[in-house]
Length: 178
Length: 359
Image (tube, rainbow over all chains, first blue to last red; front, side, top):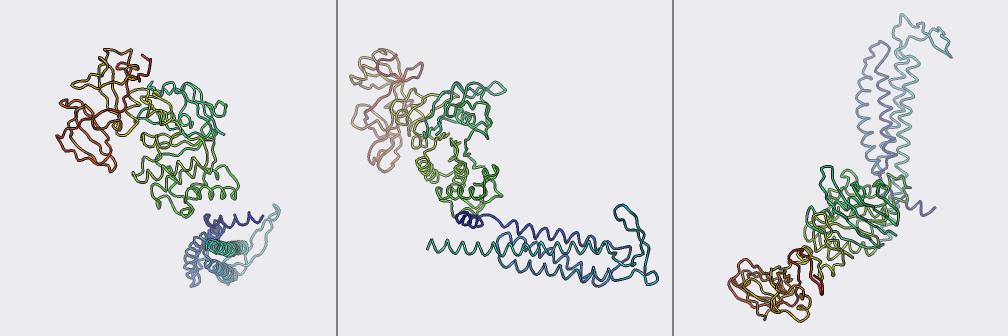
């Protein structure tokens, strides 16, 4: 068992941290799903200042997450912090644009509209708030952001553990050689 | 354990060109066999037939008594080291060496142990994270060998692995292959056109020419008792000198020269009285102080020895190269008298060696 652990740690000297790297890339994918969903709003042009910030942040996020993915692949401990910060950012984003869009009415004059929801094959007409982002879409974008955040946190944790284990192993090898 | 048996192997291509004729050989466990010969003699084709990369047109191949003639290459339990290394440029050295085991879906820890063991044998431990283009030719060839070692095959096959290396690296890598063979004790088939490699590496040599096996034997046997003029001329550096001579009155009469025969040599040539044969003399089997006059053309000083190139006196068609001990300062036009300390005799028609009592 002990020998297996040592071999596993030694393998990290020559194998990349693909688990951490791929999780970071998956976070980017979920983020893509998020901004594809959010920019396709309900026939309303919700072009505000926050939308502009969101677009810029998406670009920065994807670049940073990709860099962090490459850094994590090479067991760079510092990138765990970046991954964590990006994960927190994804959580915070839930409460900004999606929340605003879900709370904003399309038109004050028509505060509610009849919509049909389908439950177990039954079509049920209900009166729903006539908001920029309907409930279904709102839940979806929250899920995408949450999943993205989860992947980033997982990537950060895995990178942290593996990087520390590798550093300890290399230090141990250097001591033995000395 | 790996004993190979090649029985009556022929290789005939679709255009009816036959590259290998009736190749027969038994390889004992742990032997290093070198197939040597000029380009196009069929040595690489034979190796590829053993590897399974070429179909065997006729004959059979056995490994440990099992007929593997029709067995696909991947199932033959053999590993091949190519002339051009055949490494994956986008993978690290570690990944290259682990690749075959990764394909076999072996446990990652087991793969790691095997790769590290092979890397230690080949002194590649500090190179494992590099890519092939960051290594020298010799290191790349060691990686190729390491990739074979990790598979722990029954037989190692080397296809001119040193041809792409410079002379200095060739010598160093040759020694490493020899050490590797001693360390692993594995059965190895090695193809080369370089007779120095053959002589230094082989337990036994297979000398080939134009698809035919000329002689199989230890390096000493091929050097000392070559079967024919081809083997005699191919093995040994500088190559053997050949002269057409007639056996007459107890001596060999050449064009403008004569060479005395010993009692034993007369006995060997007893069936060739007054007949023409081919006299072969190695450069290192000549000394000064004889009766054969030689006009010197050039001198090559090698330190302990000197290569003297010239003509047997007055005969510009009869070149001679002698390897004399010591530092000599002969110049163009100087004369020197040589004697032969060892002679080889070959039948003029068959080119086969004339041995005692044979015709």
